[in-house]
Image (cartoon, rainbow, N blue to C red):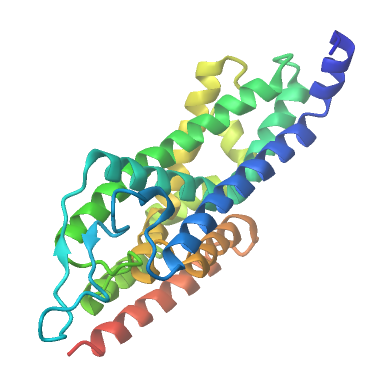
Length: 286
């Protein structure tokens, strides 16, 4: 490809960035659906666990295991091997990319557009890639914490085979905590940064042409996004980490919060519903 052709491609930065984001989202969701399909198959182990006999919850959940009297055996925790931890971490990281990329797309596209208009860098696509990488790094760090949380819940026998809380008290408390967080000033402050990409860029120095500056700016934006959405991600332990409909529902809620111009209405409404659902679960606990 000659210089003229390369320059023509770079001028279409919005198209290139959009296509890249779409491809990343499709690949991430494809991986999640593949894992979910593997778990849904009867008498099968998850795709990445073949050969190791690993249960996705980190427990030897014995759904069909019977003792000599025909009664179901109690779940027994099986210690994770390093490969188990790596697999669960990869699952969380890819799932976060699939869930969060659609909601950050407007910010990434704006960043590429500002770079082109400012003429600060002849390669805005490269700088935009660094910005997005910084954003993903934040959610990668969150994935480590989520993996550790899953390990702990599995060790305490609080997860079902589909990685959902099998204790109504735990599920209710998580729902209430997440719902209350939706009303906090921290949530509101972080959400404002996510809802107004232009204001975020202008208040944080604008477009960065150097890779390290773009990477750090992406980390800053990712931190605000994490502050906005981390509580919603804990709901995966309520409905099931591999429940595709539940994953999609949370991803849609995140997208609506960031893009629909209703200010704090959606977080407060969803937060109220979460609290009520949590109270309902606790009330039904024997």
